[in-house]
Image (cartoon, rainbow over all chains, first blue to last red; front, side, top):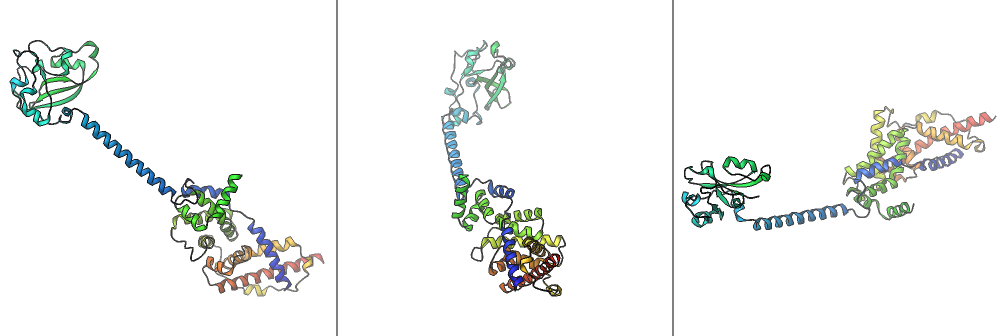
Length: 203
Length: 202
């Protein structure tokens, strides 16, 4: 019986010694990271979900705002840009390419009701006539000198392209020296044969 | 320091279940709190059973990671988190012991204990304390794993029979009988140590 009592005493001492051993602290960091980098706070198990919900709401709001802005911008843009891909309606030669005898500017649209209907594409042609169009006049559609003598186009389309100022030479136009190396945004009126009939410098 | 105190107080205020839920929701702090609360028990148990600090650390880590991966496995109604963790640790330990040929794991036969002769009870006053403790400690390590785990949980960790039964997934009666056998072996070793000490003195 004495040994049993002694054993209990020894076990009690051994137990105290045993319970003094602590868990390695290195594991705490590993487990902390494993659980989620310790970002969520104790006592708020759903906080991570709340943040996720807030993030989703913010994202949706941003998308909605962006969409509204895009719609606003789209509606405020000239309708001509929206209808750019719409092929222009048949154009009568006398209206599309004013002859040299036509005086001054001629409003192409005024003689092309179907085009207004189709896409409200305003295509105002200046008379290229006998003299070369000036650079300042290219803010509106001007018949290209090189288009003279081309067959009458049954269908016209507006094509927007980027090109250098010096490239205008091949269309019979002379760009100012300072714009020769600049990239320009231009719109061409192109016939169904793919040949340009008129040009406008957008920017 | 104040932060640590505040954190400890916060840890104590929350139940294991609350901390577990928070850990599952991604709270590293909750996980750390659970580890601070139960890590020592799991680590000591695995260390004493495996006698290998690296293995004990690895198993302890796996046990706590199981808290995150085995979602829904822990049922507070069926037992405490500490016993559930020790149960997982025990399963991992047995796998480890099997891999390392730890001998007959379920050998709980105590016939050999009866063969050890105990010439006399011996005078307790002649026993040097540290020698007795060392002898029992060594004897504990020599116990078959099935007896050792009961001795660790009940004698060293001071778990109740019911808690130990939950950890070991055996009936309470089995825990009681295994602990009795383990103590009988240790008592024999202790008696032998006492006799040896007495002889040395004389």
